[in-house]
Image 1 (cartoon, rainbow, N blue to C red):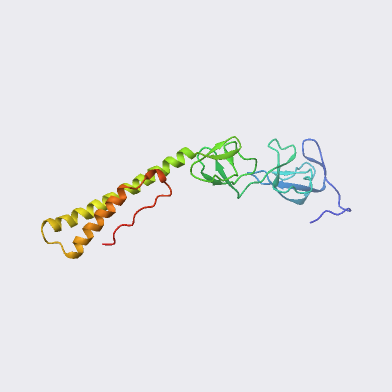
Image 2 (image 1 turned 90 degrees about the vertical axis):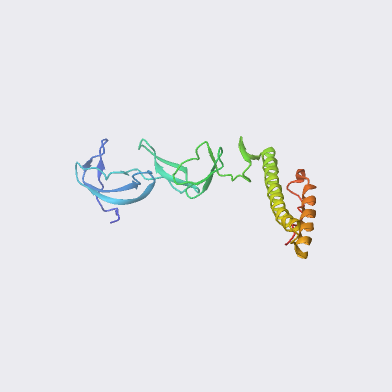
Length: 206
Protein backbone atom coordinates (compact mmCIF):
# COMPACT_ATOMS: atom_id res chain seq x y z
CA UNK A 1 0.00 0.00 0.00
CA UNK A 2 1.10 3.57 -0.72
CA UNK A 3 0.47 6.20 1.93
CA UNK A 4 -1.98 8.93 0.88
CA UNK A 5 -2.60 12.34 2.39
CA UNK A 6 -5.76 11.00 4.03
CA UNK A 7 -3.97 8.20 5.89
CA UNK A 8 -3.29 8.62 9.58
CA UNK A 9 0.43 8.89 10.17
CA UNK A 10 2.15 7.00 12.94
CA UNK A 11 4.09 9.04 15.46
CA UNK A 12 7.32 7.64 16.88
CA UNK A 13 8.74 8.50 20.27
CA UNK A 14 12.45 9.03 20.82
CA UNK A 15 12.93 5.38 21.72
CA UNK A 16 11.44 4.34 18.37
CA UNK A 17 8.03 3.09 19.50
CA UNK A 18 4.77 4.43 18.08
CA UNK A 19 2.82 6.72 20.40
CA UNK A 20 0.09 7.09 17.79
CA UNK A 21 -1.07 4.28 15.52
CA UNK A 22 -0.89 4.90 11.81
CA UNK A 23 1.09 4.52 8.64
CA UNK A 24 4.78 5.22 8.29
CA UNK A 25 7.13 4.90 5.34
CA UNK A 26 10.28 3.06 6.38
CA UNK A 27 13.53 2.55 4.48
CA UNK A 28 15.27 -0.82 4.53
CA UNK A 29 18.94 -1.77 4.38
CA UNK A 30 20.78 -5.02 3.68
CA UNK A 31 21.48 -6.97 6.86
CA UNK A 32 25.17 -7.46 6.05
CA UNK A 33 26.25 -4.48 3.92
CA UNK A 34 23.79 -1.87 5.30
CA UNK A 35 23.16 -0.84 1.68
CA UNK A 36 19.83 0.87 1.00
CA UNK A 37 17.35 -1.76 -0.18
CA UNK A 38 14.10 0.09 -0.87
CA UNK A 39 11.15 1.18 1.22
CA UNK A 40 7.72 0.01 2.33
CA UNK A 41 4.73 1.59 4.01
CA UNK A 42 4.05 -0.02 7.38
CA UNK A 43 1.09 0.30 9.72
CA UNK A 44 2.30 0.65 13.28
CA UNK A 45 0.21 -0.04 16.34
CA UNK A 46 0.81 1.95 19.50
CA UNK A 47 3.83 0.58 21.32
CA UNK A 48 5.35 -1.10 18.28
CA UNK A 49 8.40 -0.07 16.32
CA UNK A 50 9.52 -0.24 12.72
CA UNK A 51 10.91 -3.50 11.25
CA UNK A 52 14.49 -4.50 11.97
CA UNK A 53 17.16 -3.06 9.68
CA UNK A 54 14.83 -0.21 8.73
CA UNK A 55 14.86 3.53 9.34
CA UNK A 56 12.29 6.29 9.31
CA UNK A 57 14.40 9.11 7.87
CA UNK A 58 14.32 9.40 4.08
CA UNK A 59 17.56 8.69 2.18
CA UNK A 60 19.22 11.63 0.42
CA UNK A 61 18.59 12.28 -3.26
CA UNK A 62 19.67 12.26 -6.03
CA UNK A 63 21.88 9.22 -6.55
CA UNK A 64 25.63 9.75 -6.82
CA UNK A 65 27.32 8.02 -9.77
CA UNK A 66 29.88 5.42 -8.79
CA UNK A 67 28.72 5.36 -5.18
CA UNK A 68 26.22 3.38 -3.15
CA UNK A 69 23.95 4.55 -0.36
CA UNK A 70 24.15 2.77 2.96
CA UNK A 71 23.47 3.34 6.61
CA UNK A 72 26.40 4.44 8.75
CA UNK A 73 27.88 1.85 11.10
CA UNK A 74 26.31 3.59 14.11
CA UNK A 75 22.91 3.58 12.38
CA UNK A 76 22.41 7.32 12.83
CA UNK A 77 22.57 8.57 9.26
CA UNK A 78 22.76 7.73 5.57
CA UNK A 79 26.11 7.91 3.79
CA UNK A 80 27.43 7.63 0.26
CA UNK A 81 30.39 5.30 -0.17
CA UNK A 82 32.42 4.23 -3.24
CA UNK A 83 30.86 1.28 -5.05
CA UNK A 84 33.69 -0.61 -6.76
CA UNK A 85 31.96 -3.98 -6.81
CA UNK A 86 32.74 -5.94 -9.95
CA UNK A 87 35.86 -3.92 -10.72
CA UNK A 88 39.30 -5.51 -10.73
CA UNK A 89 41.87 -4.18 -8.28
CA UNK A 90 45.54 -5.11 -8.01
CA UNK A 91 47.64 -5.77 -4.94
CA UNK A 92 50.49 -3.25 -4.90
CA UNK A 93 52.83 -5.80 -3.33
CA UNK A 94 52.08 -8.94 -5.36
CA UNK A 95 50.38 -7.48 -8.48
CA UNK A 96 47.71 -10.16 -8.02
CA UNK A 97 44.24 -9.15 -9.31
CA UNK A 98 41.06 -9.49 -7.31
CA UNK A 99 37.47 -8.57 -8.09
CA UNK A 100 35.99 -6.15 -5.58
CA UNK A 101 32.93 -7.52 -3.81
CA UNK A 102 32.35 -5.07 -0.96
CA UNK A 103 31.27 -1.46 -0.65
CA UNK A 104 33.73 1.21 0.40
CA UNK A 105 37.02 2.74 -0.61
CA UNK A 106 39.94 0.65 -1.79
CA UNK A 107 42.21 -0.70 0.94
CA UNK A 108 45.62 0.97 1.01
CA UNK A 109 47.31 -2.06 -0.57
CA UNK A 110 45.06 -2.11 -3.66
CA UNK A 111 44.85 -0.01 -6.83
CA UNK A 112 42.58 0.00 -9.87
CA UNK A 113 45.60 0.65 -12.10
CA UNK A 114 46.74 -2.59 -13.78
CA UNK A 115 50.48 -3.32 -13.86
CA UNK A 116 51.97 -3.32 -17.36
CA UNK A 117 54.21 -6.32 -16.78
CA UNK A 118 55.31 -8.93 -14.28
CA UNK A 119 58.27 -6.67 -13.50
CA UNK A 120 56.28 -3.65 -12.35
CA UNK A 121 56.56 -2.43 -8.77
CA UNK A 122 54.38 0.12 -7.03
CA UNK A 123 55.98 3.48 -6.29
CA UNK A 124 53.82 6.10 -4.64
CA UNK A 125 50.81 6.32 -6.93
CA UNK A 126 51.89 4.42 -10.03
CA UNK A 127 53.49 1.26 -11.36
CA UNK A 128 57.13 1.51 -12.42
CA UNK A 129 58.80 -1.23 -14.45
CA UNK A 130 61.90 -2.70 -12.82
CA UNK A 131 64.07 -2.70 -15.95
CA UNK A 132 66.94 -4.47 -14.20
CA UNK A 133 64.71 -7.37 -13.22
CA UNK A 134 63.22 -7.42 -16.71
CA UNK A 135 66.64 -7.61 -18.36
CA UNK A 136 67.79 -10.28 -15.91
CA UNK A 137 64.75 -12.37 -16.77
CA UNK A 138 65.41 -11.99 -20.50
CA UNK A 139 69.03 -13.00 -20.00
CA UNK A 140 68.00 -16.07 -18.02
CA UNK A 141 65.49 -17.10 -20.69
CA UNK A 142 68.10 -16.63 -23.42
CA UNK A 143 70.61 -18.76 -21.50
CA UNK A 144 68.04 -21.51 -21.03
CA UNK A 145 67.20 -21.41 -24.74
CA UNK A 146 70.89 -21.51 -25.64
CA UNK A 147 71.60 -24.47 -23.36
CA UNK A 148 68.60 -26.39 -24.67
CA UNK A 149 69.63 -25.84 -28.28
CA UNK A 150 73.22 -26.93 -27.56
CA UNK A 151 72.01 -30.07 -25.82
CA UNK A 152 69.84 -31.04 -28.78
CA UNK A 153 72.75 -30.44 -31.17
CA UNK A 154 75.21 -32.44 -29.05
CA UNK A 155 72.79 -35.35 -28.75
CA UNK A 156 72.20 -35.45 -32.51
CA UNK A 157 75.91 -35.14 -33.33
CA UNK A 158 76.71 -37.97 -30.92
CA UNK A 159 74.20 -40.27 -32.61
CA UNK A 160 75.47 -39.48 -36.10
CA UNK A 161 79.11 -39.77 -35.01
CA UNK A 162 78.48 -43.30 -33.75
CA UNK A 163 77.18 -44.26 -37.17
CA UNK A 164 80.20 -42.71 -38.84
CA UNK A 165 82.70 -44.35 -36.46
CA UNK A 166 81.11 -47.73 -37.07
CA UNK A 167 81.32 -47.09 -40.79
CA UNK A 168 77.60 -47.60 -41.18
CA UNK A 169 76.58 -43.98 -41.81
CA UNK A 170 74.44 -43.38 -44.86
CA UNK A 171 75.12 -40.52 -47.22
CA UNK A 172 72.21 -38.66 -45.72
CA UNK A 173 73.52 -39.19 -42.17
CA UNK A 174 76.99 -37.99 -43.18
CA UNK A 175 75.46 -34.82 -44.59
CA UNK A 176 73.33 -34.41 -41.49
CA UNK A 177 76.38 -34.71 -39.24
CA UNK A 178 78.08 -31.91 -41.12
CA UNK A 179 74.94 -29.75 -40.90
CA UNK A 180 74.61 -30.25 -37.15
CA UNK A 181 78.28 -29.40 -36.59
CA UNK A 182 77.86 -26.22 -38.61
CA UNK A 183 74.76 -25.41 -36.59
CA UNK A 184 76.66 -25.94 -33.33
CA UNK A 185 79.40 -23.56 -34.47
CA UNK A 186 76.79 -20.97 -35.46
CA UNK A 187 75.16 -21.42 -32.08
CA UNK A 188 78.46 -20.79 -30.28
CA UNK A 189 78.71 -17.42 -32.03
CA UNK A 190 75.36 -16.19 -30.70
CA UNK A 191 75.73 -13.11 -28.49
CA UNK A 192 73.33 -13.54 -25.59
CA UNK A 193 73.76 -9.87 -24.71
CA UNK A 194 71.49 -9.00 -27.63
CA UNK A 195 68.43 -10.39 -25.89
CA UNK A 196 65.57 -10.17 -26.68
CA UNK A 197 66.60 -9.55 -30.31
CA UNK A 198 68.70 -12.68 -30.75
CA UNK A 199 68.94 -14.08 -34.26
CA UNK A 200 68.99 -17.79 -33.51
CA UNK A 201 70.44 -20.05 -36.24
CA UNK A 202 68.03 -22.51 -37.82
CA UNK A 203 68.70 -26.12 -36.77
CA UNK A 204 68.98 -28.82 -39.46
CA UNK A 205 65.74 -30.55 -40.37
CA UNK A 206 67.27 -34.05 -40.23
